[in-house]
Image (cartoon, rainbow, N blue to C red):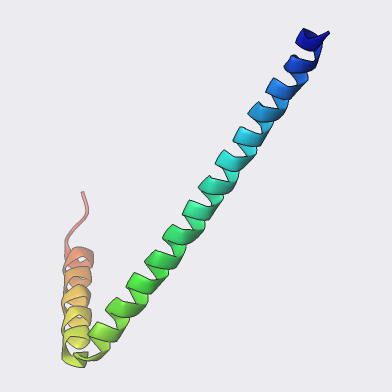
Amino acid sequence: MSGYLDKPQSYENTDAKARRKLIDQRRMEYRRAIESYSEQRQLQQQLADYPELIAANYLAGKQVLTRQSAQPQR
């Protein structure tokens, strides 16, 4: 009779491990999202200290787009 009782417990352990693994995956995704957001905010703050760099990057990007649109297509 003890063999009969051991099988359901092993399924419960497997389910518990699967649930914990899923929770850990979700927690890590959430943590990565928070870290990414934090890094983006920090970068935005650093760029805000140098507004001339933002303008220069904008103008350089605009020139590249203008050149690409001016090239004849094959």
